[in-house]
Length: 247
Image (cartoon, rainbow, N blue to C red; front, top):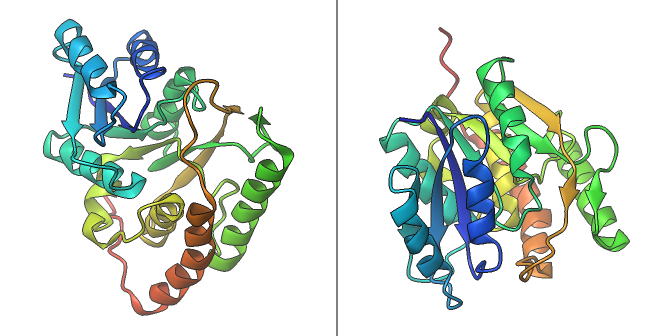
């Protein structure tokens, strides 16, 4: 059995889902894929089910009854992965903004370079974003700077959604206490891992805006992140975080 699981949340990704799954399965390192499907009306789930007959031991799906939020999708995936004892658990978008060819880099950072969390970083070597409007690039870049300043974390891309976790991280950080569902979920997970004493490494990637399908970003998501950062900092003053076990 593979020790690597890639979690891909989906909502209306029929244009991308088959190609992204095949791209992951074509890599030289073996990965399993878990799709967290939030009731897409476009038939995304049917495509995955058909592919499961081709890849019965590598491709899995959890179907949910509606659009319940990115954070809850990943939490469901994390719990599924922990139960099945995967060693390395990855977050990845379905739309090819995260290049599947970068998965081995994230794996290597955790498996061979001492990282507990590896982040596919758009900003560790400058601004590596393709096909985003300049306003969105600036908003994302400045948001990461703001988060880094308020939370005091030494991470260049605090809002990144392309990551690898060692299972110990997800077992330690008390997933049921992660409260944000949208954009701020990515920030909260990094901040919590940082406060728990885990080693975080940024791996440079090039982020390419989706070509097919519709973006799920909106102003409410950014609002949650902006005000959520302050809440995280205040709550952190009063919370005792579980700590990484020293072997």
